[in-house]
Image (tube, rainbow, N blue to C red):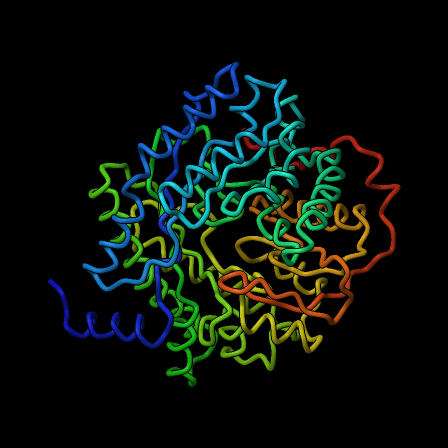
Length: 452
């Protein structure tokens, strides 16, 4: 039975505390679209996406109207295109990027993810061709997002892929320098990539997934912060319990939207990703939650401990509210997308080194970080390798989404607008890892991988 206080509390969360459904993402398998003829394959891909997703945006909008729950993004994730492209290796994979772009525009989604390759243990010809094409594909499309998985706890880290992705990130930024280097903002390099992630740019539809599913990503940093503001007398244990209870309420709303979208679209419900996804808007910041716990600024000593507690409490509270939890699930720390992170980076209180430490205990990795435009590709690769090592050893997903700001130096700003936000160019340690990166090969899987 509905409780009037619960209803009023939810209304307050939505109206005053920035609670929303960050994304409803439809995952679509394209495995049956492979064809030796790339034009036929693209035609199959386009037809299948439009057939399944033609009512996705309208359905999400209708749910928003019926329940009064803001749904910010409607997205699509598809089978990694490198797998589909492998059947027609003699042609440029960019044709698939254009095909995805047309499909995204036809159905009206915000982004489509899956221009991706999984190379944690090695390359196929299709993988290599797709990775080579990523900068061009991101330059020539608006809605397409790309990702590459270069490591896993079971396989180790593919250092040849790490070296390659440093160059690809630089190239993506250079080719879109006239658009705030936005190509790099649509590209993420992952270790232990989940197959059911609804969040861009790392979303793709894994080969173990059903033909079509609905995944939902929730948000709500402002709700957690508001709860903490009203409970200043709690000790740390009390803070953790309060976050768990709040995460339950947030995730319950995500479960409602996921089930309703599944029913209306006649598509199976996949997962709810219960991550706290921030925005540049005032009152919607993970950094401000950490500061509400008692830190003068995010980046201060104690930040990693506070973030570890927040991440764990979000997971514990969220899993009770949903029948299927997946994706990344926890707390995101994207610098340009979080108002508190932006302020801390501008003031110098938050550094890349501290962010790297924080990624060991949160949901993802070094996300939406602007670096100097002259940062060498091998330094970018070194950052990727470090972050992948954290993910590999800790059996968790880590990711790197760096934006080399071509023509800009430390302290200058890059402004993307919208949910991507803005931020300062952050200082990077430029001591060269070139000889290490150039060795190639594969970092062996850790002992944690021997679980069978």
